[in-house]
Image (cartoon, rainbow over all chains, first blue to last red; front, side, top):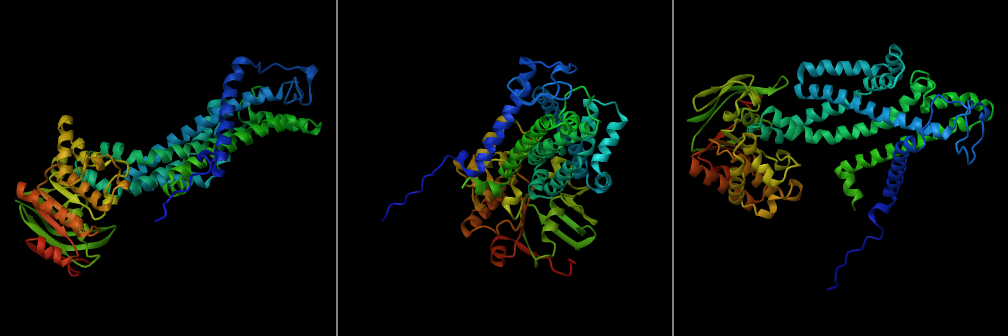
Length: 289
Length: 220
């Protein structure tokens, strides 16, 4: 009888077509984070300094991203802006997840009338355009990082609340929860030992999927003049300021911060999507083939 | 000494499934329960296991009338009634290894930690689960092995009553025999009352002392 031999994997798993994008996205994100952390230490920026003798210079060795209409280095400020955007993106996404997780958790665990009331609140907030609602919240407060975070956090908790609620409602009716209750488990034990461990990975995934959206929101609010004070570097502020330079042909003043938003948010979105696929056993089975 | 359901009316969201159903399981006896699909056998098991509230009627455990269901019933009362569900896959938390699955009821009531390992080993041995299986998670074992682990879990508290909701339906003949033997063995040692819900007339005739019918007249 012929000997049965299994085909050897021809390429390493992480080099396969699906995984190559993940490696690129992870590299981009790591480089972005390292640069954001290192640059302020190695090459600090005086945010209010202007250099009127260097206005509108195109990209060169001295200024790789060119200079803006006030003679400020565009790449240097973009890195500072990216730092703010990532920080706001992550904190706002976590805030939104906490709000959504808490409300969705209460609705899913209690069911009945608390669930009905909370879900009507979700429907009502979802019916409002969330950018307008975010603008309304931030307009009532003084322009600051905290206001932007609060505005994003209070308008983006809906999807997390829905995910947590539906997961809990479905888990609660599963026989293994009945078995736990029948075995003597207290409410707290059922929650911490059997419900949360199933919900937490999904909450974590929802948070990472929200980060690029929150970064985009921070940029939009700053672009509309509702984010950080104008002299502070933020990607939205810079793209807004860059519009004026476009008329004089200085495209780099808005393109460089714009690219930073696009590249970093795409990298985070790609990694989140990959993680989501990894959590889905059906997709995982295909990925591991 | 018995587990009794008296005049139970029960259902889901206004849809009545059980209509004036009464059933008694004496300690030490094995009662069979049969009936066509949709007559509420599983609902009756859930009511008896104190997991589902009846719309009217009540459950009595050893002459003590039980009020409430689920967590409203003290753990010391809930643990006197063991349940073995039809699908071991659905009844096992996919994150737990088989040994954690069996130990879970003991940990839930803060059983002394040093005794848990010995108890789990004993239960697993009686269920015919070899030590290498105990580290595996549900997805890495067969339905039969998982159902035996679920039975070990259901017997962890040495319950006074065991409710088997079509618990052997999905199993092959040898695993069915093993499960039935383990339950009978426990019954002989502790005098536990057993309810066996099944569609299989041969199994009910062979295993049970008497058979109750749940038909469409009592269930609507």
